Length: 447
Image (cartoon, helix red, strand yellow):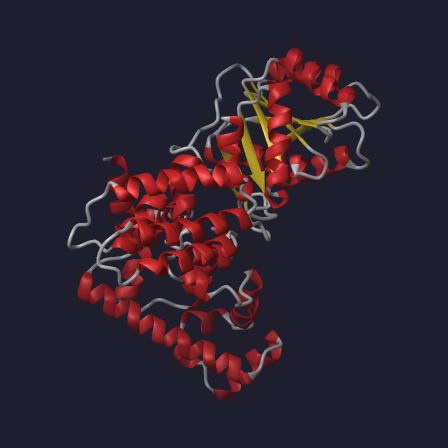
């Protein structure tokens, strides 16, 4: 995401590289390109001009420290202004109320139903909630079935009234059902509508009045750019919602919606959708998004994703095995599974500073692990535990069983042995491991 914008901003900052000091002339040149980059990202001219004017004002008032170049200073100022433009601080979801009612609204095709299920899964697995999904879209064919299938997939109950065509009554009865059955969160998926459709807008307003939700979230497709911002304003004028959800940020988005929707509607972006998996949902952090736009990566989010899959006791056992040179293919396979649970591989790698740009044209996804997994699964339990027994005939059998070539098997075995040696060497020389790194990061975040 934001690849084009990141490239344009990177080229703009190069004007100041090698400059000994900031002048009105070189700042004007840089900001001219920054403004063009924002306009190409589908940011409105008014906001793009206001943004660059603020950056110029701050840049001209700065003194350059000997340890900081003008280019670095400009990046810092732009980063701070981008963060401010997108809302400064993350805005969490309000879960007060018994039950807490969350109303999901948005345009046709914005991804409301999928997001509703993702949100239910997020609240269940990460916040310890007991959610109930409500199928309130009575117009779109198969909408109720879609939500029901997603509910089964994530293990969340779905309230449906397939014979009813009255969304307001369905929502009201669903809340009463949730209260009676002990659900502490109700997520109401509603039908997609157009801002110009007066009848449908009246309906969503009536649903809101009937259930009095703690949160009304407006779901918008980030790939629609400035149109998304205009629609968000029209909906907010009518619904006065609490926050925005940007879906499809993993697609070919120019970024205009993410950058300007807060400035236009004065409502925070609360969540972003970054893939099709039910786990592909994140809280929106303005500062981290600014990091990624400027090519700085997002190490904090990467570590947080690792923490979610991290088991300290397992890590302690793994460290002992590495120290004794007993790390085997079973351990290797377990680590692969943990990495896959963290999300899309390419998106994870892009969180590492400098890596995202290098991987831009590389086809790297979850399928990249399938060949490796097939090879390991074709080994006997004894071969996985003791890779030293893998002679030529065994490797040939494994290649045939996994549908791979002998060269691929040999390459994996060699890479595994090299990795095992490196891990043991690191353990012996530094005495550090993933567990300690995550614990330190966790401590830093508490301070």
